[in-house]
Image (tube, rainbow, N blue to C red; front, side, top):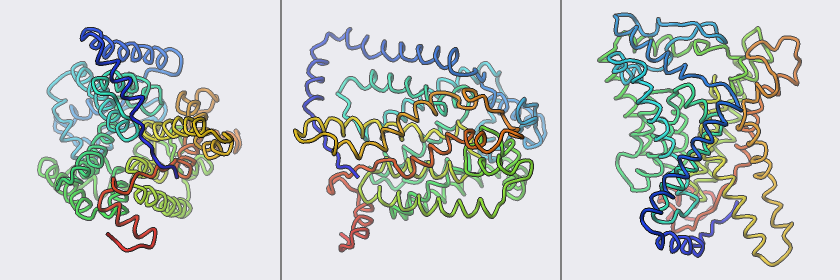
Length: 448
């Protein structure tokens, strides 16, 4: 565990330089780097790295909503998929209600609204994440956030979210606003963001773990209450669909695609590749889920006790990816804050080692784990590893266990990050009341 040291000297010098520039130069330097980086990333992502998915998932939502508006059950909609044979609408009814305005317009209009919304949501997430680790000079926020947002779309989960027209960054933003904005302000509405995310898609329910570990009892109740209220509101609009989803479809995980697909980067996906064509053992998967929940609980508790909210919420997100029955690459957006945490830890650690004046090697030793994660993460998340390694979409018959393990490289990186992701110790005065209680309990001292 490292202790954060915020040294404003470099920031102050940069701030002075920025303030001295003419206003026109500041405007150009705010917008041009972000646009240039964005265009470069687009060219790299869609001409070098992998295929352009042409908002395939967004098209499913669009067609399913039109199918629903025509008087059909939205969960009866299905269309051909080159990998999974057939795909349909799989989100809870609230998501369908929120998407229902799509029925009144064209797909071109839906794309014109959704794609900028995804990019803006990513920028908002980047801003909230960077504020936890970086002091951005006043006036340079647009430039810094714009460039980092562009670079973030080099990561496969971010790239796929935009390419498929997925909703994952919207859900991530709801969680971050809850934890890093509302909770910091002591708002009584803390938990609403997580609750809404849970009602739109089930997997964000893992963030109740963070609220419980950090002893934010009221926020946990608000999250549950919001999820239930939003679901009941959707049931008023779509009662039959709500009943069908929560009594039947909820338990049919194969509706989202083949569990053994190379794209499934959960623990269950690895098991499915080994047991194919038979389904993976529910008992084995359940045992692994329990082990991961215990490990995740311990790491999240450690981060909460240190006051490192960003690490705590990131670790929670990584646990959710690992234990979910299905985790496609575009679900793993929590790799973004993980990479920011790793990168900032390396930079601070190297600078501290160089400035120490003593032997550098011993001070660099704790950075080996984060450095390995960053180096491997550049490869694993910078490319589609299935394409790079020439692995099949689904059928691993005759390829052997090494191929099956190679097909789970993103999952193994996520698993390693769960144990290696650095936790930064913030000054005790900066901890929230709930974090201080956890810290006190961990250290065996009286509660404040």
